Length: 437
Ligand SMILES: [Ca+2]
Ligand SMILES: [Ca+2]
Image (tube, rainbow, N blue to C red; front, side, top):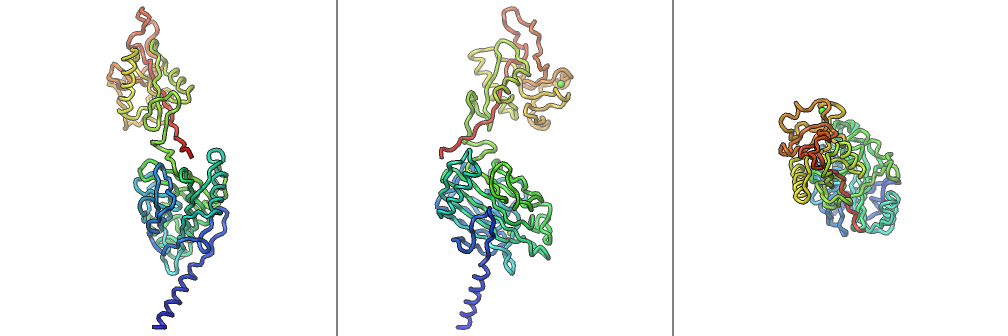
């Protein structure tokens, strides 16, 4: 019995000594491991820290979370543990993650391949460092930011799943630092060493740590809409993360900064319309433009929008069309005289190839409600597309300078009802609302 106890003590001390790693010294990485209050997770493959309660809720893409999970496969997740990973590029549904190095990582080898540490902290030194880092990185926008809470998760010399031969020696060291003042939030992606690109599954090679699906680096809101990706994500450039510096954001080599409280891609409730643009559709704000008495040429409609920092509205759906019809109908009820509507679509540059005002090609298999006979009508000098009121608002094409000569004036100082488009819709990006903090 005494011998058993002694053996258990020896085993326990052996386990402790194994955990006494030497944290790397790197200007990008925050302190971690022995000597800090870090929690060390058990060795695992596709494991998780379990739910970690947060003393300060973390704002993340328009929501706030009271807990998080630190997962073996190189990511922090919100709402639920994410013990797997995905090789599909963000945005994807589910996988609500901040992914530092999202691939098949495994620490549960004998001997152990790496250590995953994490802690929340309000240590004054760490908060001061986080405050300085954010103020230095974003002096114009966040120059007065003061951090009041930080979470540090570190994957120290972790190995790849399916390692064989020389692959048993490949190790990656990286860290996520979550920072908030309770309102705005940021994450630092810190890299010290990248020796493998992916685990041996997903087509990977266990001896070289390479393969067709290198790790994903970025943030995924989990709704299939909001996301951000590091430029090296899913490429062999991942090897260079420890020396990479963001050309747009000052910071030490090996660090990528992202703000995380706001959704800046796609539709967001935290968007407002710029002055003069009252109607919101998705992430665009719209303004009806018109000339009640004369036809207006396509170039004039386009340049009027451009002069306002806008572009002609790009119609993507029947709902967009109905929005315009409704707007015109209300206008006509009060003022009359609005007719056909230019949309931002022409084949001026290449006959028969229609391009939107923002340079994107018309998706020929997508929404494109041409009126019957348009294509026979579309010859070299008819290049601009409009909603044809007389043809149930279907798309028709005409000369870009308006298709009736001014002689069509009916003598009463009015143009004929079908004298050509005299309306257009300018679209501007909606503006994200800065929280008051
Ligand atoms: Ca794994
Ligand atoms: Ca044409």
